[in-house]
Length: 228
Image (cartoon, rainbow, N blue to C red):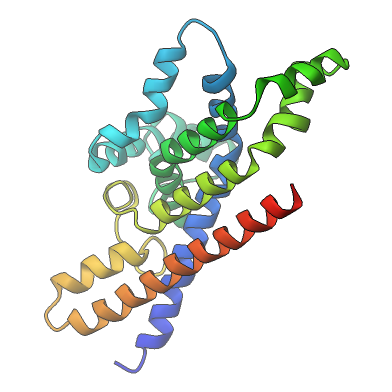
C-alpha cells in the first residue's frame, strides 16, 4: 500500500505523455485533413470524410485490432518500420500514443474544420488579390483566424486520449509502466479484490487532470481572443 503514491504518479505521467504525444503528432495531419474537407473540391472528398470519421463509428476494439494488424510486429507497416528503422509500436507506450491519436483524430479534424469554415472567405479573397497564393493564404490568414478552433480540437483530442481504453488494450495490451494508462489502471483495479480504494484515487486524479486541461485551454482561448 505504501507505494501507491509513486505508482499513481507514474500512471499519470505515462498517461500525460501518451495523450500529449498522440495529440501533437496527429495535429499536422488533422489540419491537412480539415483544410481539404473545408476548402477542397475534389473527387473522393466524401470518401476522405468517411475515412476520417471511421474511428468514431467503429467499435474501439475493432480499431485496436486493425492497428495491431497494420502496426504490430507482423503487420505490414510495423514489420517494415522495425526492419528499416528499428522502431516498433507493439506493446510499447508509442503504440498507446498511436491508438490515442487515431481515436482522437476525428474529433480534432471536426473542430478545426468548423473553425476554418467559419472564417470569412472575403479575407482570403483579399489576400489572393494582393498576390498571396492559396497555401500562403491558408497559413497566414485562415489558420491564425481559426486558431481557437485548432486549440479546441487539440483539447478534445487530448481528453479523448486520456480516457482511451478499447483500442489501446487491444493493440498494446495492459503493461504496467509501459502501456498502462489511467483508464487501463482503473479497469485493472476494478477487477482485483480490494482494489476499489486505489481505483477511486485514480478516478479523482483523472478528474483533476481533465479539469486542469480544460481550464488551461479556456485561458489560452481567451488570451488568443484578446490578442485578436
